[in-house]
Length: 196
Image (cartoon, rainbow, N blue to C red; front, side):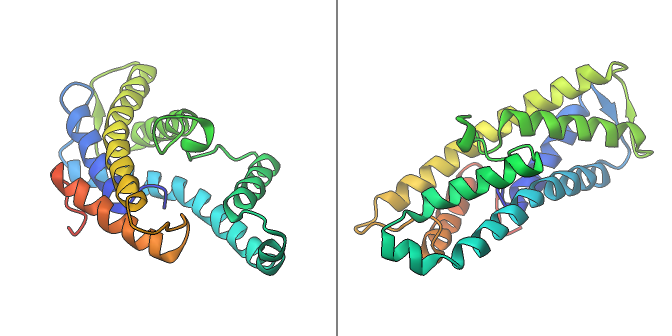
């Protein structure tokens, strides 16, 4: 997933905690945080399924790409862009659109709309703020703030991988394992333990 499940859980808890200060009241903040985490996780899983589909497609052409010297990351990007345009999916990955965060601004905005709709229908809370757009804008602001902190962690983890003695191509199993390890170490420095 684009964001670690543990980070999504952390982000959801932080949203509920910070929104509870002035925007909403709830006797069950853990339940509301879980609902937020479930919505974000499901929304991001759509892009994961798309990535898996592209990987499956490219695995059929691996010999051709190797023989012709075609770059796997470039082919992955092209195939994914084609599927995104065909299916009219809002791109979750911010790096692909030039955003400074893992999630694109469009995806954060889309998620904020879905969260406000879900929260308005929830019986576990009450909004103090009557204007739903003000609630949505505050969700966008808080998510952006948390995602910027996460981006610094991710950038540091990627830098550690690049500093290895030999080049480790992104997307390989070794790269993923190293990234997960360094990412968890950096989040721990911020007080977020992915092991919990």
